[in-house]
Length: 58
Image (cartoon, rainbow, N blue to C red; front, side, top):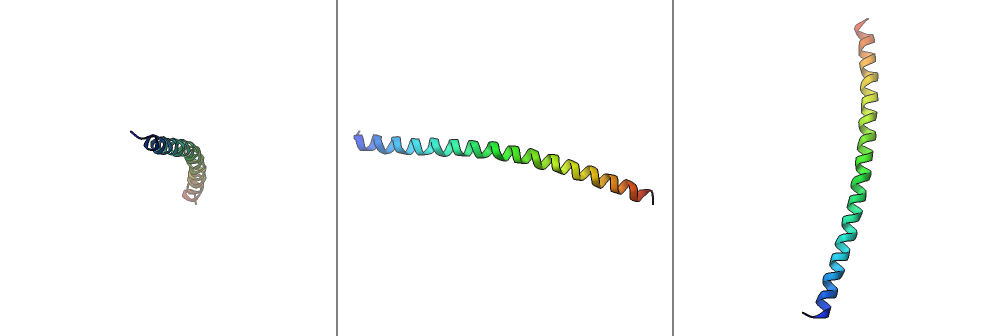
């Protein structure tokens, strides 16, 4: 095979590895954000449940 083909293949592989690394990092950030949203949802759910309990007493 030609050296140019190997260079092109190497460039594509390096590009894909960079993209994969960036996607892994983004996935980790999204997991953290999802955990924050789940915790926030639990807080809101608790507050809503407390309000509903007060309304039941009325």
